Length: 475
Image (tube, rainbow, N blue to C red; front, side, top):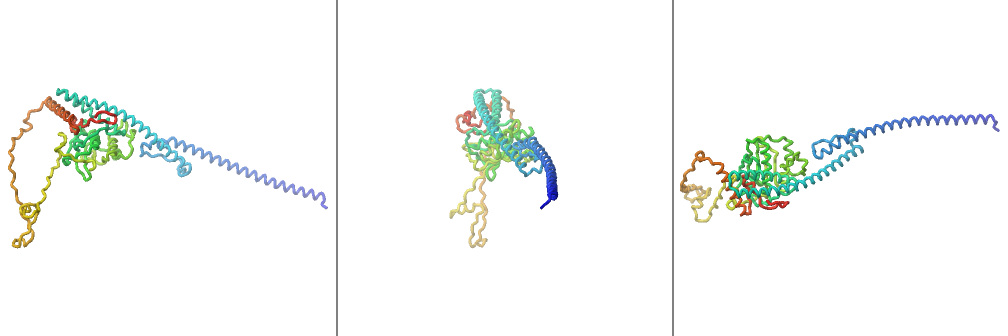
């Protein structure tokens, strides 16, 4: 039987062991709590640092990256800054921020296109009204030119008509840039008439020198006449504006393998590489054209060329320099836009430069009928075999070509007196002759359906048919 002291001792020992175990547990618990507090403090510090880094990244996004991304929509050459912390690239945070920029750029581009389309629609309506008013003014000036014969008044009316034609050209270019049709119905016309017609729409047209090297009768199909005239006018306008007033602008019309090229060379300052690249992008017509991309005030000439080249399958190149130090612009008209007119039935305008190409008459077909020895002998390069008694041992021999008698000399007319001995023409006589020419031209137009393009402001500026544009204005 266990005695009481032993039980007490055993209880005390058990209590001591329990106390020691409890103390050890409490000690471990305190150490664990201390370690957890340290980890919580470290995590809180890390979280605070991450929050500050995220806040700085968002501020950087709003202050620099978003404006740069919005500007890049209009100016693709601008660079968008990267994230503030390069380590975020490729992380979920970095991908999310990049998606924000992409969504922003897509929305800005969409809104920009929508606003620009609304602006173009408004400008189309305004230019339609302006064109109608200018055409009414043009008809009024024509009637005045036909009614009055006073030389000074006729000269003034011609100047007003030319100014009105320049205003019409600007309104027409603005309408084309905004997506309107060219607005003119034209018949087939000589290509040189379309070129000189575009020349006549400009101030300073006297500086343009046209060299026509085309075959006689080279013409444009009806729907390409007015676009070619507009493009030539804009190319010449750029050449005249960016070259010295005392220099000439040289235009050459040449046949090429796939059609015809109209080359415009000026002696201006030329363009830098960036300017040349931008001009080439505009005239190519591949990218959409926005009014906000054309400057303030907008320069619409190259943009109008781009619209027309895309619509009518023409080609324009402004990427090379001219031999005179300026810019060379080349308009290419492919063969499917060309036709032919008989110069005898429909000659070019009297003021259009005549072609320098010499017409080569077709050689007559050689006669191969038997018994016509003379014809065979006269044929160039023809050989006739000799008989066995000849010197050629039966080999073909070349005969001497016969010389035909020269035609009788025509009776020479008395030569005209030299220009220096002719009396000087008075301004009144010149104006009267110009007025008579204009009256005759207007009378001829009223009786004919065609409206040929002329090369002077008084004739070529009125190369439009009396048709109606989209707004119903009489041409």
